[in-house]
Image 1 (cartoon, helix red, strand yellow):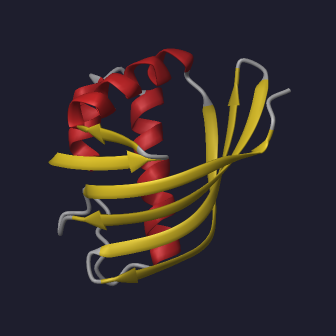
Image 2 (image 1 turned 90 degrees about the vertical axis):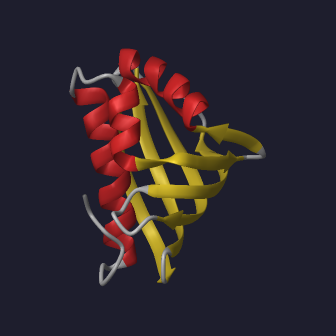
Length: 130
Protein backbone atom coordinates (compact mmCIF):
# COMPACT_ATOMS: atom_id res chain seq x y z
CA UNK A 1 0.00 0.00 0.00
CA UNK A 2 1.17 3.46 -0.86
CA UNK A 3 1.77 5.63 2.24
CA UNK A 4 1.52 9.39 2.50
CA UNK A 5 4.71 9.80 4.51
CA UNK A 6 7.42 11.32 2.27
CA UNK A 7 5.18 10.94 -0.80
CA UNK A 8 4.38 13.65 -3.30
CA UNK A 9 0.74 14.48 -2.46
CA UNK A 10 -0.33 14.67 -6.13
CA UNK A 11 1.19 11.26 -6.86
CA UNK A 12 -0.17 9.76 -3.65
CA UNK A 13 -3.79 10.74 -4.30
CA UNK A 14 -3.59 9.76 -7.99
CA UNK A 15 -2.14 6.33 -7.12
CA UNK A 16 -4.64 5.80 -4.31
CA UNK A 17 -7.73 6.36 -6.45
CA UNK A 18 -6.29 4.70 -9.57
CA UNK A 19 -5.27 1.56 -7.67
CA UNK A 20 -8.55 1.39 -5.77
CA UNK A 21 -10.61 1.74 -8.95
CA UNK A 22 -8.46 -0.76 -10.86
CA UNK A 23 -8.75 -3.35 -8.08
CA UNK A 24 -12.48 -2.75 -7.91
CA UNK A 25 -13.36 -2.97 -11.62
CA UNK A 26 -10.62 -5.17 -13.04
CA UNK A 27 -10.64 -8.05 -10.55
CA UNK A 28 -13.28 -10.46 -9.32
CA UNK A 29 -12.40 -9.93 -5.66
CA UNK A 30 -15.32 -9.23 -3.37
CA UNK A 31 -16.02 -5.49 -3.21
CA UNK A 32 -15.76 -5.55 0.60
CA UNK A 33 -12.25 -7.02 0.38
CA UNK A 34 -11.17 -4.26 -1.99
CA UNK A 35 -12.77 -1.54 0.14
CA UNK A 36 -11.02 -2.88 3.25
CA UNK A 37 -7.65 -2.88 1.49
CA UNK A 38 -7.93 0.88 0.86
CA UNK A 39 -10.05 2.10 3.79
CA UNK A 40 -9.93 1.71 7.56
CA UNK A 41 -12.87 -0.14 9.18
CA UNK A 42 -14.10 3.14 10.70
CA UNK A 43 -13.90 5.10 7.42
CA UNK A 44 -16.36 7.94 6.98
CA UNK A 45 -16.74 9.91 3.79
CA UNK A 46 -18.95 12.94 3.42
CA UNK A 47 -19.63 13.31 -0.30
CA UNK A 48 -21.69 16.38 -1.21
CA UNK A 49 -23.28 16.25 2.23
CA UNK A 50 -24.05 12.50 2.18
CA UNK A 51 -22.42 10.49 4.97
CA UNK A 52 -20.94 7.22 3.76
CA UNK A 53 -19.57 4.66 6.22
CA UNK A 54 -17.84 1.40 5.32
CA UNK A 55 -21.06 -0.55 4.70
CA UNK A 56 -22.51 2.17 2.46
CA UNK A 57 -19.19 2.42 0.62
CA UNK A 58 -19.22 -1.32 -0.09
CA UNK A 59 -22.84 -1.09 -1.28
CA UNK A 60 -21.92 1.87 -3.51
CA UNK A 61 -19.00 -0.04 -5.04
CA UNK A 62 -20.94 -3.15 -6.06
CA UNK A 63 -22.88 -1.51 -8.95
CA UNK A 64 -19.71 0.24 -10.10
CA UNK A 65 -18.13 -3.19 -10.53
CA UNK A 66 -20.96 -4.36 -12.75
CA UNK A 67 -20.70 -1.34 -15.06
CA UNK A 68 -16.89 -1.62 -15.37
CA UNK A 69 -16.33 2.06 -16.20
CA UNK A 70 -13.05 3.36 -17.59
CA UNK A 71 -11.67 6.24 -15.60
CA UNK A 72 -8.63 8.36 -15.06
CA UNK A 73 -7.81 11.02 -12.52
CA UNK A 74 -6.12 14.30 -13.32
CA UNK A 75 -4.76 15.88 -10.14
CA UNK A 76 -4.43 19.63 -10.54
CA UNK A 77 -3.01 20.37 -7.11
CA UNK A 78 -2.53 18.67 -3.77
CA UNK A 79 -0.91 19.38 -0.45
CA UNK A 80 -0.28 17.29 2.63
CA UNK A 81 0.19 18.07 6.29
CA UNK A 82 1.00 15.00 8.36
CA UNK A 83 -1.73 12.43 7.75
CA UNK A 84 -4.04 14.88 5.99
CA UNK A 85 -4.24 15.75 2.33
CA UNK A 86 -6.18 18.31 0.33
CA UNK A 87 -6.48 17.94 -3.42
CA UNK A 88 -8.32 19.33 -6.39
CA UNK A 89 -8.74 16.90 -9.26
CA UNK A 90 -10.89 15.99 -12.23
CA UNK A 91 -12.24 12.49 -12.58
CA UNK A 92 -12.75 11.49 -16.22
CA UNK A 93 -15.18 8.58 -16.63
CA UNK A 94 -16.37 6.68 -19.68
CA UNK A 95 -19.25 4.31 -19.17
CA UNK A 96 -21.70 2.83 -21.66
CA UNK A 97 -20.75 5.37 -24.32
CA UNK A 98 -21.12 8.36 -22.01
CA UNK A 99 -18.25 10.56 -20.96
CA UNK A 100 -18.29 12.46 -17.70
CA UNK A 101 -15.91 14.94 -16.13
CA UNK A 102 -16.34 15.45 -12.42
CA UNK A 103 -14.41 18.16 -10.63
CA UNK A 104 -13.57 17.20 -7.04
CA UNK A 105 -12.32 19.12 -4.03
CA UNK A 106 -11.00 16.50 -1.62
CA UNK A 107 -10.00 16.81 2.03
CA UNK A 108 -8.94 13.54 3.63
CA UNK A 109 -7.10 11.82 6.43
CA UNK A 110 -5.10 8.62 5.97
CA UNK A 111 -3.84 5.97 8.39
CA UNK A 112 -0.11 5.29 8.63
CA UNK A 113 -0.54 2.26 6.34
CA UNK A 114 -1.97 4.45 3.54
CA UNK A 115 -5.64 3.53 3.99
CA UNK A 116 -8.24 6.29 3.97
CA UNK A 117 -9.71 7.08 7.38
CA UNK A 118 -11.98 9.98 6.50
CA UNK A 119 -12.77 12.22 3.57
CA UNK A 120 -14.86 15.22 2.64
CA UNK A 121 -15.58 15.59 -1.07
CA UNK A 122 -17.33 18.35 -2.95
CA UNK A 123 -18.10 17.54 -6.57
CA UNK A 124 -19.60 19.13 -9.63
CA UNK A 125 -20.12 17.94 -13.15
CA UNK A 126 -17.77 19.76 -15.51
CA UNK A 127 -19.01 18.07 -18.68
CA UNK A 128 -22.55 16.81 -19.14
CA UNK A 129 -23.02 13.25 -20.37
CA UNK A 130 -23.39 12.83 -24.10
